[in-house]
Image (tube, helix red, strand yellow):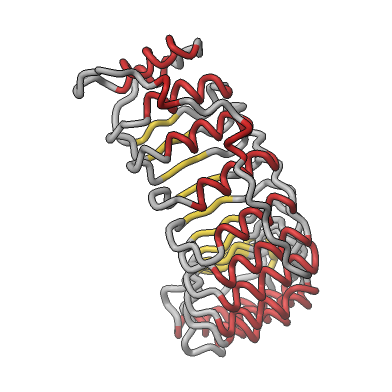
Length: 351
């Protein structure tokens, strides 16, 4: 797929961005966040959220309060010069792109917040443009959660462009969005060039074959990712060989979650050469796929034949195993006593 450059327009121009003009002046340095917030609500006309008035500690959790764009503006004003909050939770607040823009503008002045949750705020393409601007100049936010924001493939292009070569963001959650094959290709290119992300959640998207393969190609070139979550993301036997090739080369991945996909016994067979050559993967989740006892046995033999295996947890808890599996498991546990394998066994099957 030919790479398209992301337009360089500044989405913040589309919104009312006058936080500094409305910032309370001549305030005492010792004034509390609650006092600053009450004053900001008075200036903006926003309805105050009582939870914030009772808040204590470095993590401010305002999830599910229906804050909206105007409430986000009042909150942003009160946090402009705050030096106590390091984690800001704003999930499910109907912020939309306008509210997200107020938060992003606040982050230009506030350098204390390192974790930001904007999940389920209906951000869509306009919100993706706002976040593009934030990430372009970001040196502080290391964890950002953006699950369930109706981001599509056009949004993926923005994220991919700004995150190529990025070294600041360590954890990124883009689950429960509307990415498909084109989005997978953009994000795969991002993975190949990113040098910071350690935890990436792309679960509950629909990458299908081309997008999933592109992600595997990106994983093969990546050198920092430790946790990759791909729950219900369209992975099947068509993708297994590409994933196997990535696992042979990748030397940083510790957790791989492929639960609730379309992985069958054939896919397991294709995946096993990669597992047999991998020495870093510790947790592999494959529950709620279409694997049978045959695939489970194939998987276990691959672990047995890998003397450098680092696996500590294999979750195939929805697979009913056979007696041959139990026999091989005994041998595997003798070699790797720390390994935990989750499976289902019929009452008449015993070790």
